Image 1 (tube, rainbow, N blue to C red):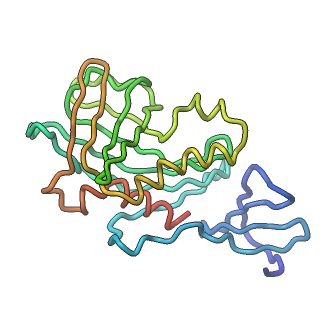
Image 2: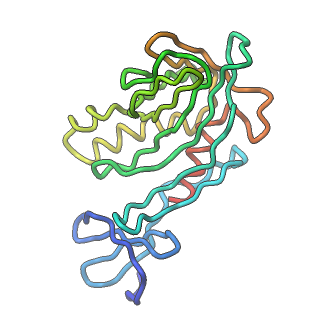
Length: 226
């Protein structure tokens, strides 16, 4: 713990037990105590030693809202159709946002093909290599594009977040799915639209990284900078 010198800080909008989280100009997070001392916030996670991290992530602090967000670089065409249709595939990236005091990793994904529409009822079911199924929910606006549809996929539905009573309970629910996605490779994905659905598998010809590690790579990249 160090004496508090003059820093350019962007304060988070809440405090807990007389502690305030603040951001330095370089994006690092510190905890400021009531007695004007501070310490660096310890990262809860370290990049996994069993994968080679091939995704870059960047941190941005909004100068108007002081919100701290992180985003990865998009992977284009990282999946392919399980039925062998070359014209259908998924592209996308991950972002970390704060919602009602909960840190959530969400996925901006675009499907190239025709599902009718991606709407709030659209779901992505991910089968992991260990056999577990993880469901992501589209929380973005409806997209009925003829050639492609985009969605914002969250590990929990927004109404579920509103129903739970504590930040700790909300965070635990979010983390349960994110940790499973972070620690296991993808076997297959099913994405439902308003008219059709698609089953996608990792693209073996993808060159920017192991396609079956899409979620692992992007989640670890975010957690390494937050």
